[in-house]
Length: 146
Length: 359
Length: 121
Image 1: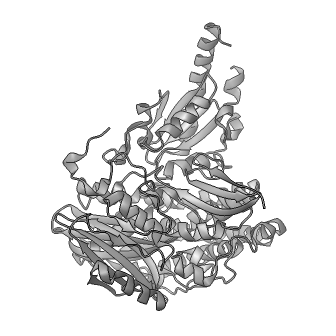
Image 2: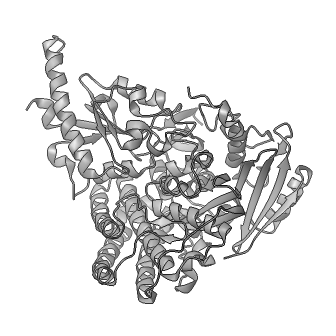
Image 3: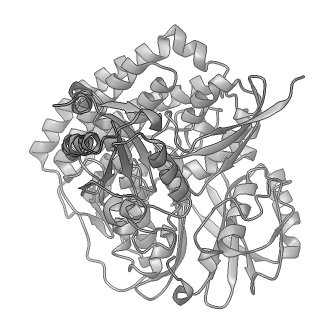
């Protein structure tokens, strides 16, 4: 375990979800699931974050916002697409204003299915994301960037 | 007199999990004007009626909002039932009320947590969400879902609750009712809470009507308007009086929601007492025709579903007017003249649900 | 179920009818535009004591401008902007006119274009 994996900081952004997944992301913070026991901190500042947790699909309006958040995050970083809308557009795939899943604009590392996704899956995804973050960090180091 | 500055609020910000964007025009610390800009989560799902038939659309309607999902699905079903002249069995109507009221309790607890968090009362956030989990457990036990229930269908409901299960639930509910009442009391009696909320974000009775406020925003300003009074889905069979407060400030709106939670427990109890065995759905055949405005009372206020059908499987128009959309103009009116530090509290007392508002 | 009524009116009558509603203390509940095969409908719904009344305008196309009622009901601006952005109906004299930037969508006037005309970007 490296430094980052013991305390990943997560930033959450709601693309165009129905709110269900967002509420479950918050529910993962409260006493029953309590992700903070793994050192996960939910931050509002992209420059503090290691993991970008996106719910909901991408549309014309939020595309620049999502890219902006992603670009502000320091390397190495991991992107989680949480919920079926974020993975593929889900039930709203056919809507005219929905471009599709998060992978249309960002490289996604972990896809989490579910409508709405359960808090347990979110915790699993974050743990998986932490593993990927470690790998990325190792590669980053090997490339002589850190 | 100092210069005016525009402070952008959102879309990504720590107060709400959802993107909302306001341009706040401020003079020093005072907000002069707030200008909203929406569309971050606009999906255009009203147009999906062209691609999904009227039965399938129930699933989309439930996903308009992940908090009041059941009531969204229910309102859509009721609109179609009204067009097709379907009479829903009594037991199904009582089950619908039970799930609607459970949704209301969990939504208000969720709101309480977020509001407390907006002024830094984080332990209250944890407490109210802990209690909310218990309500979600009941929802999960009876429907199988935590967020999207999937139990409303055109012509009735998809699942029944056995009487054994019902007794079990009622026992638990009695405990939760006390816990929640205690939590509310702690919150409302707190000096800091009063300091942050009393006299903040005032909306007069006249403004509430002329700006078209709905739900607790309207009832907090002293107007007894609650669509449940019209008796849709069997609400006429159980005793119901709208909860009102007269102050019109943030505190009054909180008080309305607190008292509504307690009223919801009473309503569930009444439903359980009056429920008799029987079918939970009727078979629906044919296609809808005609037009109807269906109204229902969501945790956030009055929702309107306008369905226009032409006798085919696909509706020609479905329009959803959600409570948050209606509450935006009164929100802007209450923001004008407030202190910058009060903005998050005022925004949260309308209980915004942006995904509903933008659809 | 409470009663509901739909009354057909012409755009010229709109301001007068809506002012009368305001004088009665009615609440503007919603404004809804619908696209039908050969025309557009705009419904203004009001409520007082649960009696639900809608005034409906029928427009042949988007070339007919509709007067704004935002001077009478302050909350109508966002419904009117919505109608303008999603259907392309011109609404004259909105108190806060976003001029087509209320909803920013991938398609222009997305609710008023043929389904086959939809091209995903």
